[in-house]
Length: 444
Ligand SMILES: Nc1ncnc2c1ncn2[C@@H]1O[C@H](COP(=O)(O)OP(=O)(O)OP(=O)(O)O)[C@@H](O)[C@H]1O
Ligand SMILES: [Mg+2]
View (cartoon, rainbow, N blue to C red):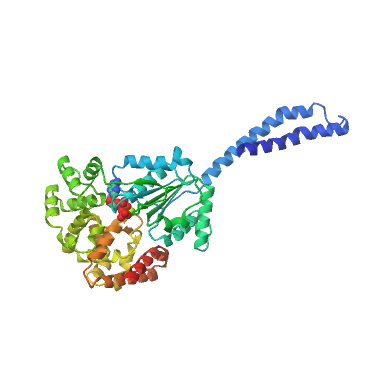
């Protein structure tokens, strides 16, 4: 492009400084201008024009670069992220390098059982490569409810200063920007099936698309990368970071007992840290007391290690703070990410005790978030939002005492209404939660 621009200007320069005087000389028979003038013009002025043009183009190019808007909506990096070096390399290679980069739409589906770390790998990949400047746009899309995809693409347009209208508009506007740009990454997290998101896939192959899904069936055009439990080394490394100062044999014993499943290891290490107990004590408790969770609910859907570590955290929580447990029940009906912390405060008037008392008091609210985060039952994010892992939500919903489930679902709906009324700016952020509540209401 730049070459074409330069040669255009050069031709223009040639015409004006060389051809024109030559023409005048022909017409006037060389009486008006000295005969040598066209050649002087060619020798002096043309190189000057070229030099000025190159300088101007270079400057324009620089300012174009500076004008390219950057955008990212990633949630915070996991400070305990461990291992997965090979997987991250494979992901990069498949997405952007070598043979795979030449196929029409390089994309990955990270699949595997719940809580194994698919989302974390995608998140870490996105953070690393955005920080390294490999992408200008990194957009994370919670894709479990595919109807929410247009809204999130709309937010991307808004971030890039593009005016958009209805849902169709949002999708096509976002994709036409992506089509004109390179160096972008879209992550569709927790996709249910290929069919569900088919119409929301960008046609352009100029950027990268990563999907995470529990579903293992993908068409051959999608390069499926299988995520497995941690290796023994990865599990030890993770535990060593989360509960430092333990001997390797103990770390290995804990890792093996929990099947090296990341979510279970995370919950167990939070428990150990929180209670300041030895791994030996934890393992004794783990082996002796799994019963109440394993007896009920659709246990076949969940890894046993997650159920048991969850049950242990819950037993403690029940003892320590009934309000925290109630808050977890409330959150179990919302979307797993982007729960505004202020929801609890706004919703205070419609909540039952003891949660209502906590909700009305700032220090008590902070303590409650801290307690739940200490057990890895919620994640606190910058910007005053909370997340609850979908697997924790599912088990929690099933563990709400019989007869209370409908009531807490209703409370979740009321809490959202009140929050939306009190803080209209949060309304857009509440849409995903409203839809999730409606989804649960439809199956009750
Ligand atoms: N590489 C890792 N390093 C540190 N912690 C991890 C890692 N992978 C997973 N975890 C922990 O395990 C939890 C579950 O991981 P993640 O949410 O990625 O699972 P998932 O496979 O996406 O599950 P689901 O199918 O339910 O969405 C995380 O919240 C995190 O605490
Ligand atoms: Mg996930």
